[in-house]
Image (cartoon, rainbow, N blue to C red; front, side, top):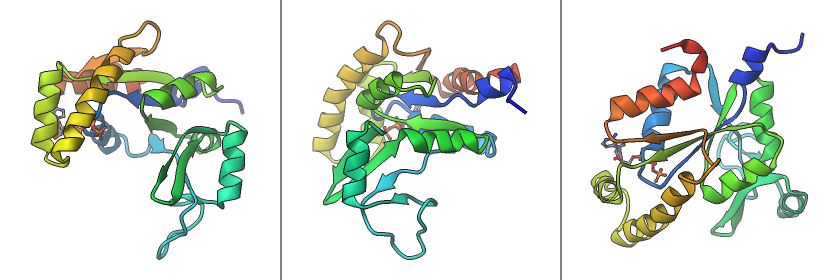
Length: 198
Ligand SMILES: Nc1ncnc2c1ncn2[C@@H]1O[C@H](COP(=O)(O)OP(=O)(O)OP(=O)(O)O)[C@@H](O)[C@H]1O
């Protein structure tokens, strides 16, 4: 039986973007906590070897460098990057796999990735998380205590660019300004679970 309109609507991937420290992980962990069955992340590709009990298609799609690069050439990735000597990426096919399993795929990606998703047939919805200001963002990044000073400075420089991008015409279906957390969560949840009528 083909999915009903409301089901297929609920299965449209959701792209969550915004500067580092804006609160994406905070909002997403709440979403997964409230709706453990409804959402999912895609499984990334990697050229690194499996460790311990890791299985292909579970933690990662383990692949050779040649196969990875072929998929890059074919335009199969939304985003990919090299860390150390290994390549990692999020493929369009992996996002579709989540939908085929009946879950709404959440993509937590950066600006360049957002641009790529817009070029695909994924029919995604886009939410952009903004900090109330660069000053507040700085406080949160320092408060989080996970980044070294150079990393904070680098993240802030990039944040200005990302904030500008997110405000652009037609970029986001929803911009959530993450000032007061409960309010931001309400808006985010309403967007991600529109059928709940909260
Ligand atoms: N509304 C809020 N009010 C105050 N602090 C917040 C709020 N939202 C998030 N924070 C805090 O700000 C810090 C950054 O949030 P978080 O790690 O969720 O950002 P992020 O966008 O996921 O960053 P990254 O892209 O680097 O992973 C965390 O310490 C978090 O607890």
